[in-house]
Image 1 (cartoon, rainbow, N blue to C red):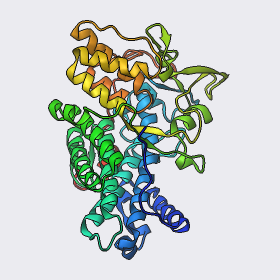
Image 2 (cartoon, one colour):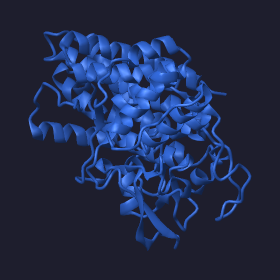
Image 3 (cartoon, helix red, strand yellow):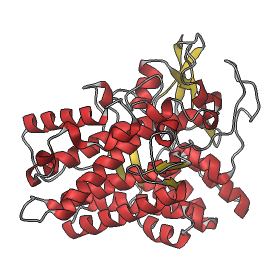
Length: 424
């Protein structure tokens, strides 16, 4: 199985820890969103020093991994995977799906380390800036100045691609470095370019894991942008057991697996009723295992927990061979789709799917995506692109007040709109 690899360089531990702590402070400035890009927390001469290239990339990876945990959690709450279990109303808008009515809310300003109301726009913008900043410096430096420069370029471009990709999935629109408002499609197109750059550098250096991760990411955004031929070319022949993870750790809250921390540790979120005890071919699906925790959540309701991420340190997949197989299945349909579904089921001992009409097979692919990619951040975007009916239905009373809405993407937050001079 391919998994995320450590960099080829080796940096003394005390240097890495000090630099990362400084980068974390820079990314956690709470003044306003636009300051996310300001490098004033680090001396300019340090940022411009090729000796610190590895530290810049390490910092970008750390920022992304925290942001990714928040992204997966928030997308799961707005979709049909997680449900709010808090007494306070701070995050009800996520579960109630009326984020489009709350552009001034926490999703735009909060950090990635909140277990109560994780942010999404600021953390992903921070991660995107950090990766792009590192990439810009690396492209300007030479191989003589930076050891393993092409390796670092591949990593920086990959994590920039991941960040643009997730912004394009989560946001209806965004702004980059104080620039004008850009659409989801424009963010996905930017991700495609970064993934291509990562593939070029990684292939030249023989970094198979990075190149494959970038190829799956590019297949995803090409599919979303309607380039099915390009998506198919990228997704074919990816090893089914390939996994590229975001690491997690119990060392500190920023490093926690955010789904575990929000669901099991803090009991702020339970499992949405429609996602409990999901059955596949009459068998409880091991990919989506849930159970009652036997305790009450913060709001006094029965707490249900997921078993995909059993502790603080369980990594979260970013891109996988399973996703690539499902992209191929979605595009090709027919027997190719049936074969892909059954190859995925074989890995967990589930009964085979016998097939059906083209429409039935396509619907089965969508359902297989729900199970195989559960709690990996895909479901909300799938709801939007496939027009999947919302459960509970739009307009149904929300038990804690208000009604369920139709949010499938988050609007540009007020903190950006009111502070960015290039947005009217």
